[in-house]
Image (cartoon, rainbow, N blue to C red):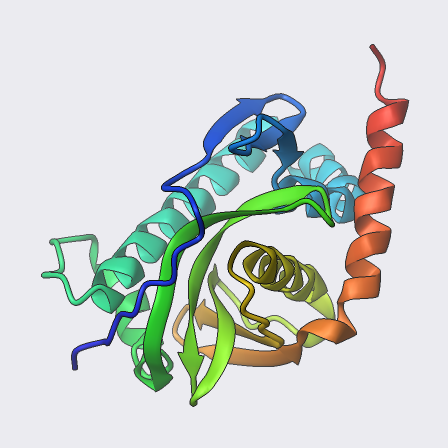
Length: 223
């Protein structure tokens, strides 16, 4: 199956990225520095992650986090190549299994407008890199790919929907093309993939609240 690409220009090729202990920031073409949406949304899980690290210990936590990050990056890279109609490289069997698990859902993707596009929003004051923008079941959508060892209930992954709502707002600012459909495709170990479809406007208020919380916590950081 060949995917159809119709690139929509965003006005620049890429954004410079700065990563510090406080998180990742993107530098816009006019020189402004905006925090990444993943850094911003991290305030929602900071306390629970700190408690988890205290429970399992830093060494074990670092090992688990590294393994999850490595797997997620490998799967994202493979999905990107698959959607780009490229020849797939040889990868570890569990990574290829993730692609095989996700294939039924990407087959519902029609025309692709962008992949791994760096975006930012002056309105929100955040930036990020969206996995995929395209038609999903014929509807213009923000499409995000996730990996998980176990199934996750909808109420556990609301930060995903806020992240995608932010991408939708960034995309409209950069291109003038409104998108309200948010699609999360989650690969689950030894399970069928989970697909969540949400509406952008159901998550914008919570997104704004979280951005405000992030800035409040930044102001409270010791100098």
